[in-house]
Image 1 (spheres, helix red, strand yellow):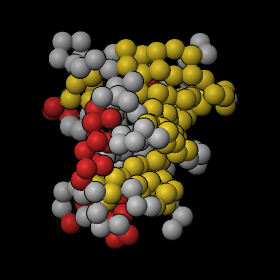
Image 2: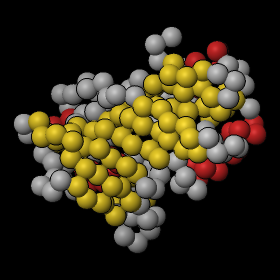
Image 3: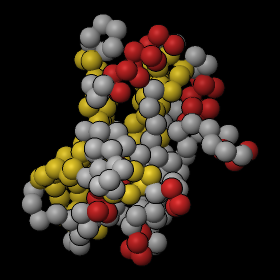
Length: 205
């Protein structure tokens, strides 16, 4: 299957397409998801982390409860390197930088998140310019924390929303068929034996 990056006795790594849920959602239409498709190939595969439905890219599943627990701890303790590629409207003037804006749920408008100095949790994103593409900019993004919609909210708050973002992008996003945000790289030390693990998926845009 073209979306399978790795399938062995320990891991299933897939390149999730934009528009597919990571795990089952509500209602019968939510039954089709990356985890359901993966379990058809590897019934013991368990969820380690998630991507937004609108985001494409690398999604990791662990085979068996022991490995899943150890890997989930590595994610929770921020021992996993995650890199994304995004195309944004406009873009920063500087070549690289860091965004530190606290984020919280926008409860009346769920699933939206918002910058909230009073209730928000600390949230940090590093970024670097990869290319200037006319009125848009291609960025590398590294979430140092893992808040819901973090990259999307941080980019929008800086004034350069991700192209195709219907939640945070405003009118410029309406004509785009998908969110141009891709989980490009995952790297970590194997949580049981310390081996270096790394997966890469080029952005499809």
